[in-house]
Amino acid sequence: MFPRDINVVIGHGIRGFGDTKWMFISQVFGTIYVVGLAAIFIFGLRSGIFGLYLAFFIDELTRSIINLIRFYKGREFFLRLVAWKSLSN
Image 1 (tube, rainbow, N blue to C red):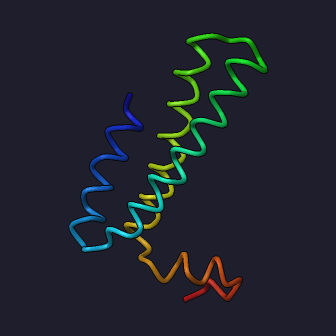
Image 2: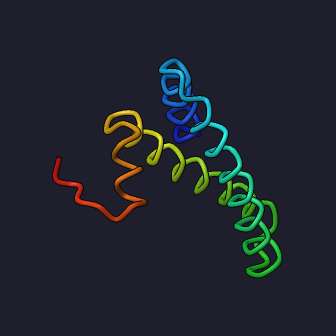
């Protein structure tokens, strides 16, 4: 799974910067996200094991994009995003 590879590499880069709190929050979000998504796909859409793999793929893709943005834009970008401040800087 290519998104997982991207997530692992970028995640190690973020850890290398010393921001382990971000990675912890990312892991907690990912766990809740994949369990909820898998439940919807498996039980709601009755897609079986394919739904589980699809949930993993979507989770890793989402987190790799978020972590990639976090890696290049920095912590301040997400702090301003959460605080609804200007993102022009």
